[in-house]
Length: 328
Length: 266
Image 1 (cartoon, each protein chain N blue to C red):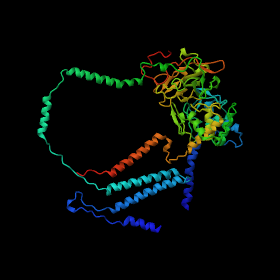
Image 2: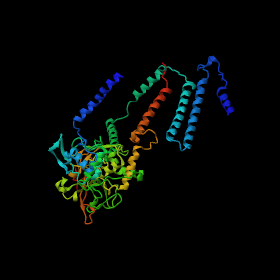
Image 3: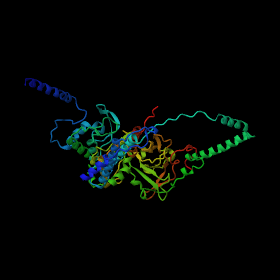
Image 4: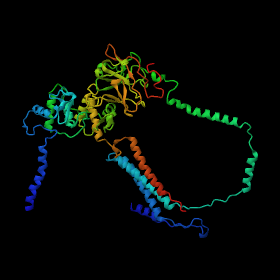
């Protein structure tokens, strides 16, 4: 051990100063001696980086030490830090830097420049129908621009919006839960809300998921054309918010309705708030139109079934959402 | 020695004066008769406390007032509160132990607050409210039997929408979902079954007692989560964590640039 240490010390300190061979008067770079202190510092820093990296390996190998993650991070971080400082010292103190300045050259070749100018003016133009060429170029540019803009039509449907009106929900289709079990009306409790899907249909469809809540039938203020849509006060709405298409996942269910905010379906993205009692009207937030309601019936087995399609197009609104009659 | 003999009574008097002043003003909440004998039966004591602290809103027999009754209110409190028939000991225990009741004023959200009653007084009130009608008893959850992983899944499904995934609380229009850090296992179990204020109510069909144990185990875990990184940043999530890391890294990088570069000498 002692011998190793002596050898290391000798390596570190026992080097001879190298002499530079070039004679003094022909030099571009002024003479500068070796910076022994900086060199030593770099070697020590690199060794420290190595020690820290070894520390990382050790902490990794010893699984049972407390705060292991912190030690791992500290060891690796310090190793990188030492490496960085070593590079810094090398760059600042050991790499020879020399600033050289060069003047801009004066303007040259005056005759040649004049000749080029003359060639350009004498050449003139070979276009005889300048305007027609301009129009052709304009047409090409315009058509290309239109082609580039055309995909923006996908941002809001103009030509075909039927996908937003046709949903998996049909008259008589049963409501099932995530496990595929049908919902019966007596399983729907007040102050809770349920997510349901159409039985035997694709669940990933925008129109598939619905939220189901039960309210006191006397509290409902549904539009007159929707009478009978909520048997026993059970209401179903599209689970997709009409603002940005997030899932309605919050239900505000007052314990004591006279003193507190009224029951509401809330979207967690931008807090669009819909009133289930009035058929999904917006009572707060950025949504621009009511939540589409799904008419329900209860069959002879007590299971919940859809009585038709939604009251309006499902999903986020687009610019022409109000142009078409919803129930088509 | 003489100074001490003078100072001490003066000091005692100074300390006693505010107490005397305070006792001369009737406290807004608290026990009706501070000198009630210790051996008063619980239900009897509960009835007295109820009459003095709860009846202006909840009615003389816990029948409740769905509409404000200005004629009945005393001390500026107008009755407008739900009936307590059938809410059981569960609800009374939850609202009293968390200091949610008595409510400051009608219509505000009952929030966790100062508990005005002693433990015996709470037990008395709970007994009295429980005797008003057949209702659920105080639950006894066993979070040690629950599974944290299952709890996380259930919490994500049922609770995180409002209370946030780290149970740090959140907002929805018109209400605040409280942070769950101070909630005891019993209080969590009670809140799930009651659905206080605008929270949904989860019956045993929606969340079984076993699942509730797992949820409580998870909420308990969120109070002392295993922060492997050491610095939790308030458990705000991976995106702010990344931003903080980038901010720190950017500062270091700018520092390195300054250290490495040098100005052109002109």
